[in-house]
Amino acid sequence: MPQERDYYEVLGVERRASSGEITTAYRKLAMRFHPDRNPGDEEAAGLFKEAARAFEVLSDSSLRERYDRYGHAGLQGGTHDFNDMGDIFDAFGELFGGGIFGEAFGGGGRRRGSRPRKGKDVFCELTLSLAEAAEGATRTVSFVRHEACGTCDGSGAKPGTSPQNCDYCGGQGQVLQSAGVFRMQTTCPACRGAGKLVRDKCPSCRGAGLVEEQVERKVTIPAGVDEDVRVRLAGEGEPGGNGGPPGDCYCVIQVEDHPFLTRHGRDLVCEVPITFSQAALGATIDVPTLKGPQPLEIPTGTQSDAAIRMRGMGMPEVRGRGIGDLIVQIHIEVPQKLSPRAEELLRELAEEEHANVTPKRTSFFDRLKDYFQPRETPEEST
Image (cartoon, rainbow, N blue to C red):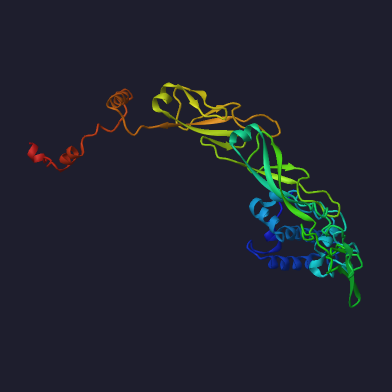
């Protein structure tokens, strides 16, 4: 499957482009690649849909923020697929006054917004420790979404009243305009395609029919989740339109850094310092794991930067396909200071190995005196 292009690149705008610049760029592309202007051109049809997807995201401040932060992965389930050209006509027809997406170009007489629409998705974040990510957890998350106003039951009308048919369009949500030989169907400017108007607005929601609510829900995190994995809470998003289903809530997982362990896929890596004698003679040391300190055998003659694998001490696969390993990377530390006895023993070892080591240090002033002491010439020595 080809990788989806960057939406800013699709519209040909910079990442800091204003909403007006984004709308203008989309209008130009939609006019250029409209199927009725490019009959039978599959490439143009694909570019037309691609531009619509880009505009839907970048023209919506919340979707744009998610896209800037998470890329295409942050939009899963939150946008239209636009597989049907009619979806594009319904969604963005008013940008063109109905002309390009109305009867003049075969957009059909469907009233915008008359079909059921799924509600938008909402997002929240949950931070886990590495141990919680490994074991899984059940936590409570809090997020904001809109719910039907309890005062007006979502109608937007003041209790005791109800929305009335729009006088301008007769309740159709669309009006016909003539432009030369064309008759163009456009979204009603009075009711914005709804077909009804709330004349006496509900005091609680001010006619919107929805109120913002803080919601708490329990979410079960599967064992082995990684950074930026999203856990879906089905049906916990924004309400749908015209009887459509609600959106979903996506809980984006963040994992705290561990003081000793670093994650690489399902494996964990830990850097452990040991002494020269431990490396040369072998030893048993405690190393940090997700289950606490565990003993590790250091083989005799272990070299610096050696990797010792502790099987089954890593992260589990989310789908239950096994558990990774803990890879212990060995670093041999060279002491910066030695006791007299330790230095004596190391010099004996160097002699045993016939190693050329730096002579025992003398004081600074002894070395300074030797440096400036006159040296005998060959003639003087004879």
